[in-house]
Length: 352
Image (cartoon, rainbow, N blue to C red; front, side, top):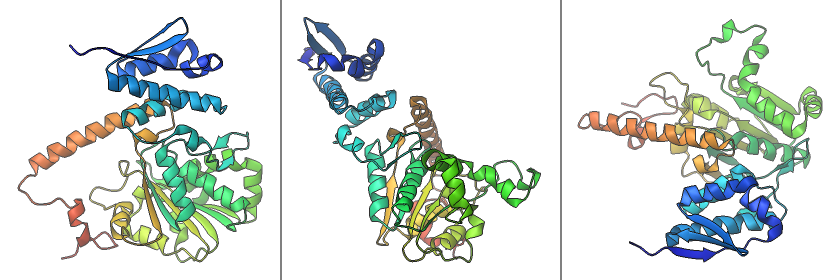
């Protein structure tokens, strides 16, 4: 039986409630995730258990200490991310992430990257002309892109903001919805409006919209245009076809910046249709001035339950994929295999 390892951790008295959590909720979470025990005697705070796990637990407490010392808010998501970083042995300081402020919402809330993946994503947007943000729901792909667009707009780095997404029908035909064409496609664009209202405010948005400085439109409206001096965001890009993606990327003019976001695990395309996002990532992988940021479940900043749901589905899809590979063994390479993508042209049709 291995010897139990013990180590003290220093937490200033004034930070106890913030770091340990209400009713020690943060401590309980740390104990559960690292399989360690915490005790406090005569002012000494001690973790005990396996040496590696104890060191990880102390790393989390030290990170929370630093955030508390800087006056940062420590939420359940902050604690969950600090634990994930320690478990995966990622070399990052959370306090450095909190200092990279993009802008503020109309309610005064700070908009800033909260994870390593998000910071890399934001850095790519700053430094690259085109950035692909790939990841599951809740990783802040669209929201951070929107914040960067509004910040660039306010600083006069671009003259207008253009937001677009494919109007994919998820089980309901556009013709069944009431109103004119714009009314029919508005529900598909609602997530973009929501982010605009939160960061810019409904009144300011309406003024800029009426001036034509902000445009929210379905992807089909981009055909035949040249978009100069604009910050353009293509959301839900996994639902584009290769032809649509090529059409969109070739609209870009001088002085523009583009962010393409998508979740490769949530495609609503017809069976057998190649995603334009998949195709673009392969075709453009060696093109300069294009950045690609892959966000994972670790980067999810919604309710902690969302991270668990994404992980559960990832495991399920991985299991299904292995079963398909086993059943298809000896039958040749599947059409969606990465090694076979060279044979697909930009229209999504296979070359002979």
